[in-house]
Amino acid sequence: MSTTPGPAEVGADEGIGRVTLAISLCRARVAVPELLVAERHAALREAFSYLPPRCQQLIALLIQGPPLSYAKISATLGIPVGSIGPDSGRCLDKLACPPVRGRCWVW
Image (cartoon, rainbow, N blue to C red; front, side, top):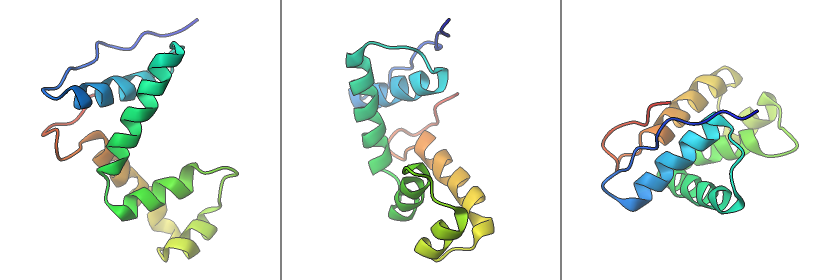
């Protein structure tokens, strides 16, 4: 059984449309053909590049495998353990609302 994402929003820029589609597919966890997987990864890399370096570092540490403890992430970035969750939430919000787009994607 698979779920179907809502319609992908098409932005004025084709790249933004790809990012929107990629995020929609990620959220829906849909089985997609290999070509769409490659498109999704490219779009997510593009969106990731718009994040501030600090957000890029934090998200990279959070998604690497094997998972790092919050204590290790805290020591690596020099931030309090208690700020990792809120900071990552703000970074993900920035990922959903890139400055070049002018508005946010709706999950």
